[in-house]
Image (tube, rainbow, N blue to C red; front, side, top):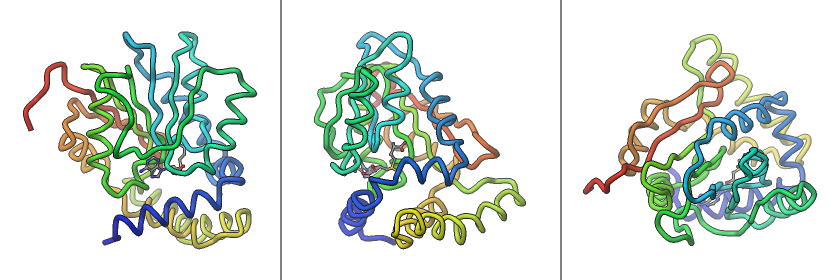
Length: 240
Ligand SMILES: C[S@@+](CC[C@H](N)C(=O)[O-])C[C@H]1O[C@@H](n2cnc3c(N)ncnc32)[C@H](O)[C@@H]1O
């Protein structure tokens, strides 16, 4: 069991250190699949009356940018705990001319009024937030009724042989390659551990329900290495 405040400090430290090489490492370690995964979420996303989307734990902004490039041109707000990650995001958003607003903040305490967004996205972020339930409750609070949360996250695949290969990759290859490129093997060992500790899709849907979201479903990508979990804010408030 990790100590939540120590974990928040550790996460901020890790992403501050890896920020300059984060994008490169993402593409190398996923063999470019991460681009396809974010594009899948951006296309699947349902817009609504506000024309606004919130990307929690936006990091270097790739999902926020993919959403902002949709033909409807929604305004995307990207929020992240680690200011260093927002540096590359700012440069990419300025270069693209997309409608993205970036700000530093904590996903468990969103600085937005209730019902401000049509959709909330979060790619590879919830795994790093100790109080996931609070983060998802906050996502629900800022959504319009019937609005959807889209969470893209890794988990260990369910098929036995894919799982075996993937666990070897997580334990050995990921920390080494991550360490080689970033000079920080310990950070990539930690990130691999958080993937191995992440709940199964069914367990995670249970967590979404416990946070007040309904109609949760999951969609597997790339042999179940990554999953998109989708759930909704109820049309009427359900007493908890
Ligand atoms: C693996 S990166 C994902 C970045 C980006 N969404 C992507 O698709 O590449 C995880 C991000 O979560 C952010 N993060 C961790 N805890 C957070 C929190 N409590 N609130 C907001 N962001 C958080 C980190 O700073 C980091 O940028």
